[in-house]
Amino acid sequence: MDQPLASASDIPSLDKLVRQPALAALVVRYGRTQVIDALRLHLDSLRHAAVSGALPRAAMDEDAIASALAGRLEDRARRRMRPVFNLTGVVVHTNLGRALLPDEALEVVAEALKWPVNLELELATGRRGDRDSLVESLLCELTGAEAATVVNNNAAAVLLMLSSLAARREVIVSRGELVEIGGSFRLPDIMRQAGVRLCEVGTTNRTHPGDYLEAIGPRTALLLKVHTSNYTICGFTASVGVSGLKKIGRERGLPVAVDLGSGSLLDLSRWGLPREPTVRETLAAGADLVTFSGDKLLGGPQAGIVVGQADLVRRLKANPLKRALRVGKLVLAALEPVLALYRAPESLAERLSTMRLLTRQAADMKLQAFRLLPVLQQALGNAYQVREEPMASEIGSGALPTQQLASHGLTVSVARGGRGSLDRLQAALRSLPRPVLGRLAAKKLWLDLRCLDPSEEQCFAAQWEALRPPDGTLGTDRA
Ligand SMILES: *Cc1c(COP(=O)(O)O)cnc(C)c1O
Image (cartoon, helix red, strand yellow):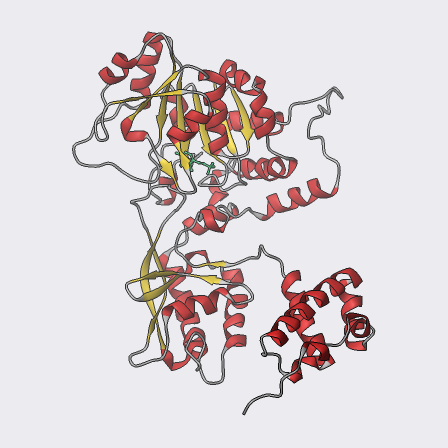
């Protein structure tokens, strides 16, 4: 049956509408400016619909207008950045904000937000201070370095290092280490931005000490080693280690820098995790400077950290770029308590959130999977088949790309003859109050439970229960 249509002249005036009680309530909630803005937009859309002959008379109703307006305003007020459930199996997930901060750090950040802090003030002397000094001695203690500086992220750390030590000169890098990190960090591009000439040596799979020695000339400023964090080259390979580079650097009077990427502060194998070179080892092997991220394996806030020889760090601090790349008080507030946790490695696996997730045992997730399986199966109805299955998580952010951690979780597939679709299911999960993100592979949606903190399990389950449609059609084609 056709609905009766309205024309543009039937649309009530804005002035008349704002005086309606239904709108008055919206004015109290959102303020007059927003309500009038939204109302104007809504009336425009009604006029467009009227012109194309698609405006049902019912849309003219004041209650209908108020309710459409409420929807618009609510939509606009919804926060864009929201917590999600990361069930992708990638623990340090760049698109989901990388490391999660421990409660200790949250309290310090909240304080730094609310009160003035001694960001650049030496309390002992009352003189102006250097913000780096808030974490510098802790970084030196944990890595054995002489000095440290902190910038916005590791890309900035590499940029600052190159620009400070090698502008208008050459930096030698092995062809096997010219990395691209997701999100457009490409070493050759950073070099160009830093005003440094890149001198590539060796081949993709093999680089020898002789390759570096041959390339060194009067314009060479630095030998750079980049930790190939998001890929491995295996088979017939050769590369020059940090101590090998140091030997060359010492002979030719050149500093050696290492971009370590995820920058572990402790040997992770003590927790049964795969080994990554630590910052301390890299310095001990002869690196003069090491750069790494604060929010990868270290488990802190987004930051780029440079540690190493005092005279080199001093040159970085003196570069005007440092001012442009410096971190704010929130980052330093979060970084200090995270670093302090490393003073007690025995309790790191409980107290550092990232480490707690990385060290969870598959048996733990398996119990969770058994508890949650009936909840999900109920919510999804017979269009889908939910199973508990072993799976493999990754550390993420390029750390140890080929190493996987035994995990457990739930998989969802479309039931035989069911009306489900994994694309629609994923879309439905993304539209939950707290969106749920999994991984699609082999015609299943994989929900790895490693990153579902047991304290969040109730909230996770409740969300599915609330969502259970009477006909079991979540993520199915209702038409
Ligand atoms: C991750 C990474 C970077 C970039 O670090 P951000 O903190 O994301 O800027 C640079 N180099 C290596 C080797 C990395 O692994």
